[in-house]
Length: 310
Ligand SMILES: Nc1nc2c(ncn2[C@@H]2O[C@H](COP(=O)(O)OP(=O)(O)OP(=O)(O)O)[C@@H](O)[C@H]2O)c(=O)[nH]1
Ligand SMILES: [Zn+2]
Image 1: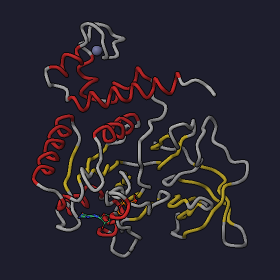
Image 2 (image 1 turned 180 degrees about the horizontal axis):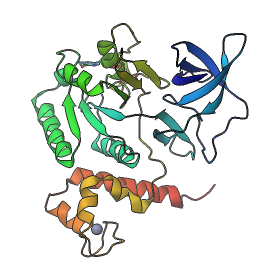
Image 3 (image 1 turned 180 degrees about the vertical axis):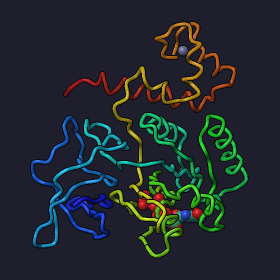
Image 4 (image 1 turned 120 degrees about the horizontal axis):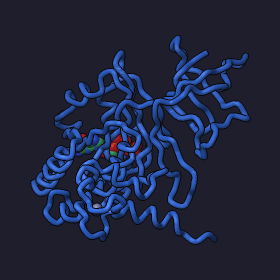
């Protein structure tokens, strides 16, 4: 029987079969994906084949080829990766500039990853009801920046309902991954759009403005007749996986575009003479915050490759 993995609880995978049943499954013992060092060989969004047994549970025996997947490093020191979801059509990155704060480095790392996997990503500026004038002005600045680069930006709030209809429209008929720091309001917004669900939501206050972890594993929710939302656990940092240093500039569209004018074709845009990117940063054609994120990723990579073994 074929089905879609809609939830992973750690020990069980919940699979929705093509005829609409939800069956709890385990992976067959010797199940391995070649060349993959992942903490979870099967992810939410995967299509799998299962063999049911008498107890009403099943074994996953085979996984269909993935169209794509979103992956991140399990933790900074680990060489292992964690697949957040497979077969997604688009991502919504939830951004709150306060309660909790989302940095531009975090946004840019996420965007670089989704560029690498060629998954279109929208920036969703959430809790828009919560901000003062300065914060709103800052958000408008970010929206201007990211729109200019080519990303769609929307503003949302469950309190005023601003942007909610717009968002529903964007989700229609698609598999959409919701991501962002813990506490940015992913679960609340899913509840708002799918009122029959009633998921657990936690209070931020006691946790130093960082939110509490309510979502531990990715989970997929069906929007009646019109697609799926994948809620992912709130993430702290975004360790990018499998990116070569020379490649990173490819995933910053505006940097990549200008880099064609660099004097040397192996320019990495840090200190080379005749670097068109450095010139563009100086002239403010490329934003300093984006360039700063680029440098931080180059550095990360450096650290990763040259860390002394111990
Ligand atoms: N003012 C305001 N508060 C909101 C809004 N959306 C969510 N919140 C509050 O933000 C807090 C965190 O919301 P959650 O939905 O749990 O956040 P989450 O992103 O799912 O968090 P994790 O599950 O930890 O990843 C809750 O106290 C919500 O009530 C909003 O639009 N405006
Ligand atoms: Zn250059």
